[in-house]
Length: 141
Image 1 (cartoon, one colour):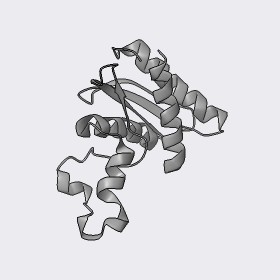
Image 2: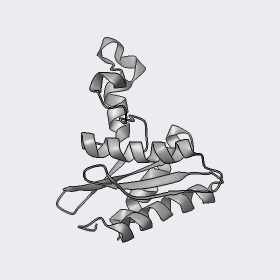
Image 3: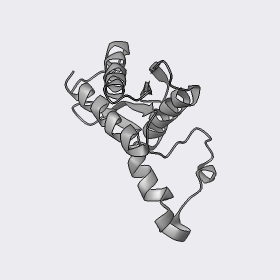
Image 4: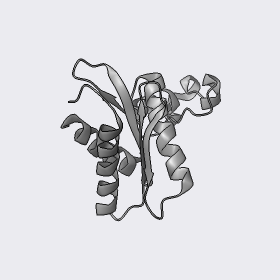
């Protein structure tokens, strides 16, 4: 696992995401942000929508701000089965928060959050699966 997250690492992760999407016949966007949620690298495949690009950035941003993967956030706070304990995203006061599957933290060897990745273009399960491929690509750098 690398101990830095710069342009080269971010590009490598996003390219792994886009290759995995292409291998499945999907049109995706992928993004990597730094530990403060600011973009390092974003790419959108031909045919992927501008919304896919925005969602990929917002998923990564959300993961860094909450210091958790967005799947965990969604399952913990926004699941319909939570009843009165469920929250509306507006409750948190940041319109960029995107608690849907696919925002995954990228950490250094010591656990320090270096940033996060996000992707968009498929079902929630496809987004999460392809995001995990990007996370594994980061881990082997």
